[in-house]
Image 1 (cartoon, rainbow, N blue to C red):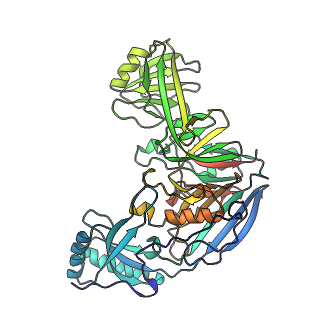
Image 2 (cartoon, helix red, strand yellow):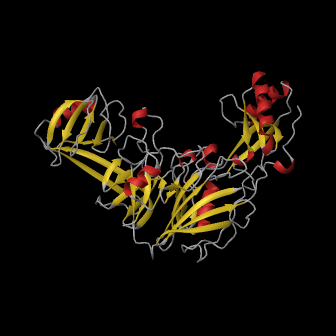
Image 3 (cartoon, rainbow, N blue to C red):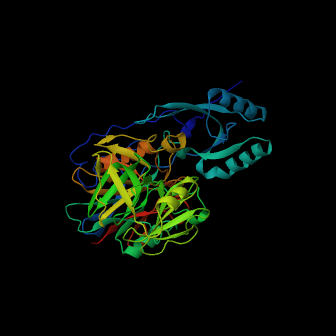
Length: 489
């Protein structure tokens, strides 16, 4: 069976080149770097700076040129883009039988700090320049009609060799001159999604970016719920995914770390029980805590213990009602409902003991009103070095590590300054986004000694002056679960 490789100006490389970036003194400051752009062929970027407020400079950064085009990718039997060599050869035989000349492409997903490199294989055919996407679409339709599973792929999204282009927004917040503070916002409720613009406007913030992942797999009424830790004004509103990266905000300080949360219900008869989650959907035999910020009814089919500010159980009721202001609700079903019926009698006291522990220092955070926490998705830079914790953070797939997507990034510098950045993507010929390795290199280039990836894709948004200043890949701003806000005071 014959095989050909994709060639010419739109060639695909089978490995990702890592650019070594020395940790210079300039990188450790909050000034915009003078070194060449760290991605692709390291072109000289163009930048335009706007002062948002004292201590906050916003840069519009552009680099690279467009040389990528389109190809056809044939799906493996499991529906994925890539698979084993044997699977790829079998698919290639089907493609060739349909009258198309396929190429089996070896792709190496690079190693990260907690996951080894992985070699997979893709089956591709055809090559069209950017202006001829319709021709690629037409050919894909013909092959689909012939019974093949095929899609049109823009090569700039692959995560392999590219010349770009890249379009980014970078906010440098200088700890020495900024006089405001940082906060987290879940909008009007935990359950409801809102745009970053809405949350910025409500708090009269100077700047805002989207926060962590939110649960798109739960019921539509609850999809604003963060997947991971959320603390707003000292109140735990969503439990941590143990060990996942997060940013701890207090006043005008920001610290990147990993967190663990524990919530324990303690009845006045001395019985204790673990609370399995906070402000989310419940599963069988779980005990959950719902706060007044939840913004939805507790789940039906269980028992609710309504607890007032003095930890007194003011009602033991059938579940499925709202959480009243000034109260919290312990909800249980199955064995958890049994615990409530036995140890949360009306008139008794049930204390809710909440701990948020910094896993780097092994110390509990003080849950004071100025404390805010936003969960990240993947650690990128630690102590000045690239350290991508994709597996630990639940994102060690080919799509998440290697392919390029829009990114929202957060970093801190050696002197405690904050860097917020968005890299737009999924816009062929305009901007290609970044993979995890490129995102880490980009943040090191900007001077971050610690950095994490927040939610990205269509959620990526930066708002300044009450305007969305980047270009979200959905074509308009998406409603999200939470946001990081930069406040004037």
